[in-house]
Length: 300
Image (tube, rainbow, N blue to C red):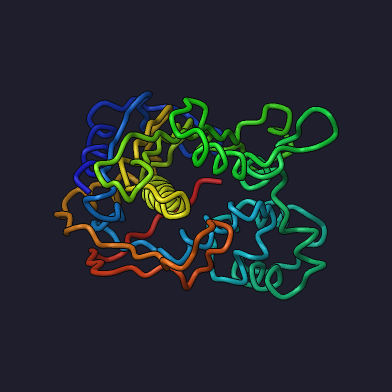
């Protein structure tokens, strides 16, 4: 994962200090790109250990079109807890619960989850339920899969989560806002082509968020390639505002002092023929060696 190490160093070397919505402050650059050949291994950061379980569950949650954190809390994924918890803390209903107690109530109490676990029309909603302007909706993900199978050379294999009309209703506007797939011919006559994915991320928390985003879209590309019988190509990660929060600088310097280990492999259950059928147990991480986890606070 030298690409990720170079990305962090680039921000430290060339970033400018900027204020931000959270009041934390950042060092930021505008415009950067990384490329990962997915045939070289699964691009999971090795200079700090990542919680792959959370990454997989979040992706399955997106694919399902879900927008409530109840599923995530039930499966030990805490990626999205900070925002609804912050809202709950400001309410008259707050009884001093810790974040952990809040997540437990979301997981165990459907009524509580319905009131406090909803994030609004975030990623999964836009992927699966984009309003068509006629009172109906468009399943962007199902349409994408259909078009990849039936018109692979199209330049319109795009999904957008940036729905301007819904931004104000979202707990957090989409950071990874648009992605596109690209198919090239394969030298393997048994395959339908080679699949690559490019993500445009308008805002990127380089220390906490980006390692999760890289892994998530790599898995997503692998799942789609399996359903459509494609070989794996590249994952291209393109950034708008890429930043390191001021309270993550020392953690980043620690991470940069560590030498990356060889990439692991991620094995998918070959029996799954549709991305909508995958469950957590269909993924197996092999040969993952990583340096110890490095903690960092989420800027809310």
